[in-house]
Length: 184
Length: 247
Image 1 (cartoon, chains in turn cyan, red):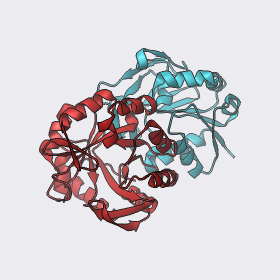
Image 2: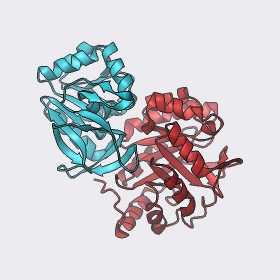
Image 3: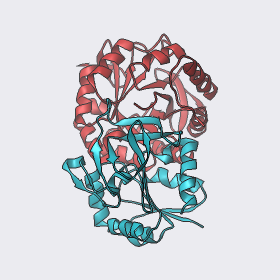
């Protein structure tokens, strides 16, 4: 059975991500053990909250090393929301934070009329609407999908990052996660 | 901007959906998870669960309820009612809620908003404001605070709130339309999303408030009936409101 390990670094919504994968019938667990993260068929870096404290926690548990090693060896790794932003080289959040450097680019604060940008928005070329809740976004040459001019998805090697929350995006989100699993 | 949102509100007490007039004579009208799932299937963009009694005993049943909701639903939901501390809020988020809303506790201790934002992120912190005649009322709309709603909303944003849930006490329950002047004043005072609440009687009311607010809270207009949400969505689409195609 496909194993999915969700990185636990005190970043809130791990329960929703876990439930979403449980519905897809895979072996899923939340863990802060870097070996478990390294060995999984699919590792997930979820995340809400701030980049600075998230990176500190990832480093404290050596999850940063495990995630870089996974991507270096071509193992499927999914970053969600802050998880995409953390994979970049840097974020301008919290006065500037060095990221995991898995994906080229940086995270910048949104300049939209209303921030946080919260709600469902269509993603192109996918066409479906997904749920977003974010104040920062990725600026990266690895972008593969957009929503209202904002990077919605980026791929670099075996890393796939999404700015939206597939675990909170109803049937469309479940279909998206099932497609991720089919590549794991 | 993301699509305008339709957010059914479920009043809960002791783990059940309840209905009552001004929180008196509460009547059990169903299971929150079942009703929430039915709303989700009918195209709700998010849900709000409001603990209307918020006693200490209710608080435990609320965390248990949040766990059950998170296990069944794949759309975002906010939990409010009686959140007084960061620990209260963190317990709800750990159980699977996406956001918490704070109201009276933030009015008496405004620093709470900043503490919540620091710990949970702004996107998880909704400041609920009940207002009448432009003035903020605390304690379920019973105590005037002497503060203007637009001023308090602006301060809440500065302290780290990610959204404002604005209820017009004047319009609430009238079914004669949302309080557009109040909603407009608050939306102009902040640059975070505003969820309008109170007064929806028909699709036209919802359409007009979505011109000024980013989301509409739906309570008595739905009568705990998910089919009404489906028909309302269809009516809004006919009126040209770009509500989400739920599939």
